Amino acid sequence: MDLWQANIPRPLSGLANHLPEHSPNPSATEPGSTRADSLASLLDLVEGLRGTVIRELDVLGRDELLTVASAISEVTAIANNAANALAPVNRLPAELLAIILKYAAEYDERIAFTKAGYPRLPEKVRYRDVINLTHVCSRWRSVSLALPALWTRVDDDNNVRLDTFLARCGSMPLAVVVSSTPCSASYLKASLQSNGLRARRLDINLDYVGMSIEFDGSALECFTLTATLPDGENSDEVIYSILTQGAPRLKALALNIFMSAWTPRGITFAALTHFYLRQDFSTVQPDTLTQTLTSLLGNMPLLESAHFCSSPPAESSMFNWAQYPQSRYTVLFPLLHLRRLVFVDWDAIDAFRFLSLLQMSEDVFVRVDTSSPIGWPSVNNLQAVTFLDSASRLEIVDINQVFRIVAETPKRAGLWMQTQGPGHIDKVLFSLLPDSLLATVHTLHICTEDAVDLLQCLLHMPSLATLNVLTPLGSSGDYSAALLSLLTCRYSQDPSSPICPKLVSLGIQATTWEWELEDIPGTPAVKMAASRARMGRPLDRFTFHAPDFLYGSDSESENEDSRREAGYRVLCRVFKRVKKYVRVLDLGPDGDVCPFVMSAEWENPEVEKYWHVPPEDQPRYRALEP
Image (cartoon, rainbow, N blue to C red; front, side, top):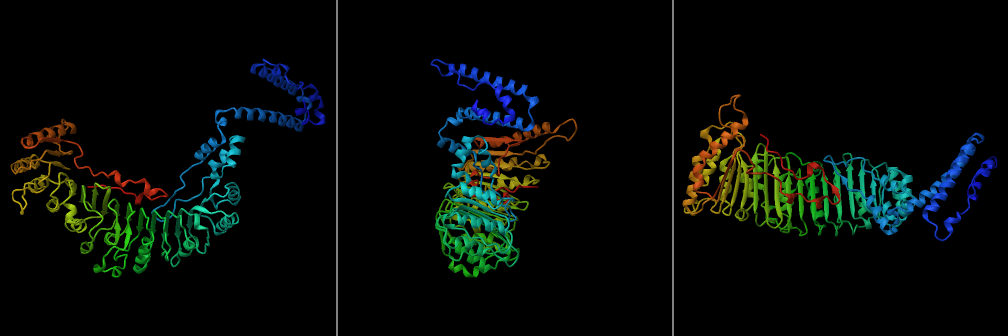
């Protein structure tokens, strides 16, 4: 009775007189009382109250009804809170609930770069999930507010929200996003300093001049800067204002600098493992660029992943190689922890000459991916790779303006070079990969328009065991016949041995148009298999697939499937005699004999541990278009 009458004004005294007495139910307190008895007593009380309210509706005004509703809501809240307290999730200890809430509020805080140098805007903190957790119930709210880890991601988008988050995060290091106006950035800086807080992650998008940002970098683990400044401006001072006092814990540094230059001025990155640099090198003097990269890598002893992107000048080298003449090519930078090194949109000549200055371990993957072709006069300037001492698998593509070399070793290391063609295989391959490395190749996938290029490759691969060839689209049977004839050749040094003496598996995928019967290289295949068998070097497996080979009249009565089946029967008849010299003869109208599929070794999520690189910077095979 007291609970209700305390909230009922004088005009409602009549209602109060009709309310049922709110006294303890004797049966609920006596020994032996049951939960059913308590529930029945409470429901009777509620039903009596409902009837009383209905009877008094005509004599009550709006304010009085709102007062009654407020009193009833208070009781309802008490019941709801009691019910929520009995829910299974709220029976968990606060420590376990805190772990669940922290997991529920987690999200990917890595920013995503774009090829133009800008992050995907807007780059703001996703605060809504955290706030929603505090609106579920009173217990979730109390646990959430007492959990500083939930409130450590802040931005400069809303000053009121910023103050709220800073008040709740305690003294934990923060993840800070700066991408608004200088005024809001200044408020963020002042708020952090006044609260004595430090940032563990700092993402800055700088697109205006005169922005002054000074943060305590002593706790920084990740720092990303995207700067899109006018000509003549640079972001040096912004970087220095954060790193000049040192960043002993910095593990990841990304500089997305558009039309600017930056030099580290002797800063040491003793703990850095991940580095991303996108810079418009076309506006940077070669002397400056050489100084920048050499001073950077010389101060990153623990570097594991480096990603360099650029917009190189079209007609000149990015580097002042006069500082490093040929006679002085020695190891300048030991990077023995390096596992991934990527050059995107670099001049290939510059990339490999720069590689020659590095000392790397035997388990590093290097990718040079550019849309610029290697000019014929520049091929002789390529520097041979020294970080690979063997190659178990080699892939070569030189067709339709796609030039690619992929070499992989058993030691989880590899080289990837992809440019626009033509690539001049006879020059590029042998300039990049020394004979000692080519001699270890046992698997070769190749597609080239010139069979002579293929011969040059095979002459340097005495250990080759598996050869798969994709013939150029639209080529006649002469290409396959030339290939088969090559494999009957003998070494001039050892006339008793054929080229590739360890070859046991040969696969040819003929991408044909409309072949004629005489185009099928059955006779050269028989001669090749017989010749190698006589020299004691027989093939174990011979595969020939012609997915587009149709045989028969092109009439409405014969559909494509029936003509393809007829083509398969022709292949079986033409290559029948090869079976005499090989253990396995695999013929077919379809199948992927020479798959150019990127190895999973090149897909390493560790590279994107701290940020997302643009899709254009990801490793991907350029299609072999006709």
